[in-house]
Every structure is written in structure tokens, then in C-alpha cells.
Image (cartoon, rainbow, N blue to C red; front, side, top):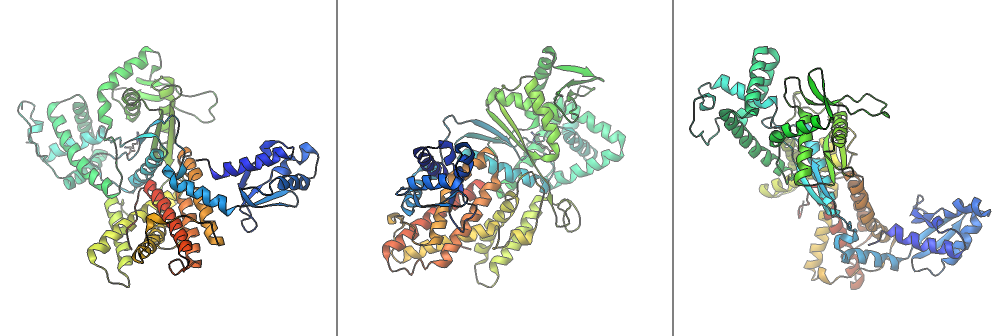
Length: 588
Ligand code: ARG
């Protein structure tokens, strides 16, 4: 379906042309004086010079041509030459009826859907998830859902950190604690046990211990590096142990991401490209892209137009070990080979900005990607506490994701049971759903690149620009619809009607913005636009609700028209929260 602004611009352009002026002048925008009109056109002002005429004269002539237009109820030429516009209620009703009957409320699907890989999440195996991982998961999931909704083939890949020194550290610490484990016996040739020799909580304690030790003890670090080397070179026992670490950790990660309604299509990791790295390195050398520099292998990526220093991209360290860059480049190579994406999006902390600039340039220069392959780094800011510093626990430690979520759940639960009787199990369930909306909306309503303050009190509030406010609005609509059904009404049989009052028309106008908004949210990779839209829509609905006695209305067809409008509003809101990655309860 065409966007409403395009449709009314067409009508306006026709009028400009009929009055003898250039068509382009007829572009219509939303009004910046909503107290006076709904839309406006400033074309007469823009054309005054060219036609050597007072703008108001042009505006008057154009307004004349629009008398009797089926699109506008009012076209007013006002000094010094604005055209103030109000939409015809019939036209408006037809437009939202079209939305209701169309697939995806009339959002136009791309002629050539793109294949898009979204790299997000990026947790490191055996390290507990902390708040730093929350943003990548929340934003990435929403970007993925928006792109899917916009009609593209989208693949979300978690890109696990499962291959570096951290694995060697864990293995070293395990060996210190349990030197007799069969994995460390070089002469062992049998089958390794199926059961891992540690639990997830042990694992999560082992890593920080090992990491701490390696910083103090050079010999320990040396051992860890050797263990990493042995692992990467395929020593059987080390590989078997690594498999255990991976399995135990991934099981736990899946549980955590599940609780956040975050789902990955691919659970690939850095380790998956280990075997293709030598081939990639040879290729880069052979084609003359990579050269040696102080013993290391690098690709120069600076460009003449650079205003800041962009260091070379290091492919191999002087000891021949691969790096973070190497695995990212090899992953690009593999994705191009297996998935053939048109577009790669990385949702990672914005402090990795320069790093991704190097990686993207290197991938282009070495032709790992096609010239037309798009690569975008969506860098996000830090989640801070009220003190403006990265969010911590009350005791000042790193905040684990599980703890954060359970604290918000508890806060929400207290609010849900306040002043009423409700079954504990139901209250817990509702609290979980609403808490997720609080956390996700609190994050997504900010532009991703900005830092934001994680404020539990504000995020969990039922009022203001919050997730719970949006859910509360949806639940309110659902409850009216249920009562309508109890009164014997049938939601299938209701038809939209022309707006009879101002707040109703305002709600309809808000609904019409859906397709343009979703298109922009996709193109600009901007979930915050979806948040801003549903906040406006929820406000428009609540204004209408407060001014209208819907269920008490005696005129049945009028009532049915309002109910139809509610159904559409609910559906649009639910679609939007779905692309944001959360859902609404039936009641709250
Ligand atoms: N594991 C990395 C980290 O913790 C993030 C991975 C981001 N994705 C990527 N393709 N490099 O910093």
C-alpha cells in the first residue's frame, strides 16, 4: 500500500500542475502546527521566486483546484502562503480499512528480498553473561525481527567467543585442580567420558580465577598459552575437554537467552572457522594483500581521505597465532561462501568501532566480499547506573544478567500484587512478561549508539514512555474487547466507520503512519523509531478512550465502528511489540 503522505502529496501535486505550477512543489508533510491542521504544504512559498508571484496567490490558486477533492476535507491558504490541510474522514476511513485488509497493514514488500546476516549476542563461552551482553541481545533481536518483518531473509548468528586464550586458561586451571583427569594423559587412546568433569557454576568460577592468576603469574600464563596452542592444534584430550566446556556453557546460554525471548538461527563460534584460516592467509599472501611487518602478517587498510589514523589489520601474530580479527575475517569468508549474504550487520559495543572499520576495509580490499555487499556496524553505547557509570550491583561488582533480570522481575511482581488479590503463580507469570517489556523497551527506546541510564523505577512504571505503559494500553484494549464479546458482540462482524470526534480521528491518523514508520525503522536500523511510534499511538488511543464511552454507546453501528478501530489498534501495537521482542499478557 502506498504511504499516506505519498498519496496526499500526489493529490497536491496534481493541483499544483493544474494551476500551472511545477508538480514537485506539491510535497505534503505532517503539520508542525497540529492545533491548526493535520498536514501542510509549503510549496507556494518555495515557488514564489521562480514564478515571481506572492506565495499567497499561488496558494490560493492551488486551494481553488482542491475544492471538492476526495482527499481533503479542508484546504486553507493562509498568510504568507502556507496550505493548511485536513484529511477527509471518508478518505481516512478507507485508508485504514485498506490497512486492515492488507497483509502487514499495507507495508510494501521488497521486490528483491535481501539475505541478511545479523551478528549479535557475541557471548564468550564459560564466562557468565553480564549487563554488557544485554544490549547486543536486545537490540540485535529487534533488528532481526524488524528486517524479517520488512520482508527480508534474515539469519541471526550468535558468534560465540569460544576459541581464544580464555579456553586455554580454563583448561590450565582444570589441570591444576584435577591433574589426574584422563584428558591430560597423552597416552590415553580410549573414549573420553560423556559427562563433563565440572558444572556450569564451577566453570563460571574457574574462568575468573584462572584469568586473575595469569595476570600475576607469568609461568601460569605461559601454560595457558601453550594449552590454547595445543587445543587449536587438535590435541585430542584438549579438544574433548573443550567440547565439554562448550556444551555446558551453551546449555546455560540457551536458557538465559530463552528467558529474554532472544533466539539465534545459528550458534556458530570463532572455533568454526579455525580450519579455513590457513587457506585464507595463503590467499591474502598470494594476492599480495598481506605483508610482513615486525614479524606479524598485516593488511594495510588506511585510505588517503582518512582524517584519523587507521592502523593495519593484523592477520597473524609474530608467533603465527590468529587473532580476533582473523576469526572475524574468516567468518565473513565462510558466510559469503555458505550463505551468500547481501548485507552483514554487526551489533556490538561501539567501543569496537575502529576494529570493525579495519575488518570491513580489509574484507573489501581482499575481496572476501563482493563490491555490492553491504556491511554495517551498529555500535551501541553503555548501559549506565544512576551515577552515570557502567551499571553495577549494589555492592559495586559486575552485574550478572540473571541477577539483573530477577531483580526487575521481583520489582514488577511487587507492583502487580500491590492492593489486590491475585494467585501467586499468575502474578509471577505476568510479572515476568511485564518485566521483560520494561527492560527491553527501556533499552530500545534510546537510539542504540547512545549511552543510557538503567533506571528500574522509571522503566517499571505504568506511566510515561515505558514498556509497562504500552502493555497496560494493550491490556486495556483487550479488556474492552472481551466485555464487548460478553455483551454479545462479535469482533469478526465489526466494520470501521468514519471518525465522529477529534480524538478518534487523531487515533486513526496515528495508525496510518505504520508503514512509513516500519520502513524507516528497517532502513535506518532503528528500533527506537518503533518505540516512539507506539508511544504516540498508545497516547492517541488513551486520549480517545478517556473521551469516549465506548461500551455504553447506544448506537450499535457507531459502537461497532469503535470496536473495529480498537481491534486494529491492538493488532498494530502487538505487531510492534513483537518486532521489539516482547509480548503482552491477557491481563495485568
Ligand atoms: N565476543 C566478543 C566480545 O565479547 C563480541 C563478538 C562480537 N562479534 C563479532 N563478530 N566480533 O567482545
